[in-house]
Image (cartoon, rainbow, N blue to C red; front, side, top):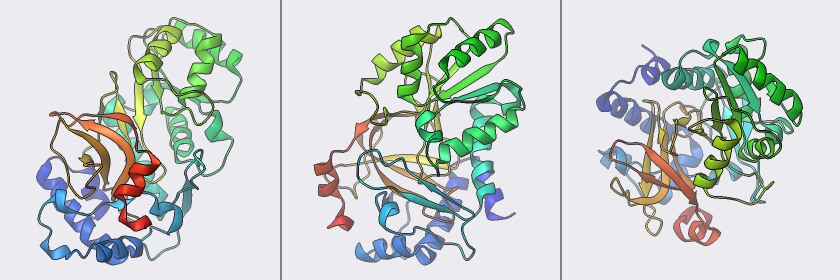
Length: 326
């Protein structure tokens, strides 16, 4: 069984730990920025016995370093949207088939086969630039859906509105995956009652609209689409895996992905469940870059391992808790 098989056959904590420590030792040796970070922290990797003790790489290093550990040339480079004037992150992907396997397996786990749905993508800001991992994922899921109505939409809301009526009338299982501001733009112009529609927001106003609370956002979208719950996808350019929420803003990870929360005043302290702090992510699909990432997102982990996104660290928080940027 090769490494990729090991990732997607994880069934319990023991399986996860085994793959996790194998990945950690491999990346500590072969990913130069990660190895430098570990050295800067004066950590002896042989002394690490618990997953919680593994050092997490600050996510901003994807902006200034090539976080990569493969002997072969990258097949694709994903980039962040860079809407906060802090520069773009770049994720060098050695094996794009691994990404496809990751997002397809996660989608199947939470929603079943893509071929069961008409899949609609309302992602104008992502489609208008190159290098979006989200567009790559949705485009592939659209192709896997093999439904004549599946496809992307930019600003052609009239066409989308008419298609939603067709799909509703024909009782076609449908998922619309949209960036938050575009979904709001749509429901401010149109209203439809499509109770079985899965509306999946991918987060963020992307600098296009004023931020509103998640509760207010979901209330508006529920009203506009005529659904009871709003689903959400949690991912980023630096990852090859996604977490999903089927309502109430509570996300669950696939078996090869795990979330921790760190103290914002002591970034090396992992907090217990039911505490809020900054989010650390283990993404074992990131075999050829870094699987251990300290993000700028704030979150809360519950006892059942579901988690919520509460916001973002401020610039002062980031300066205060990241040694590497000093």
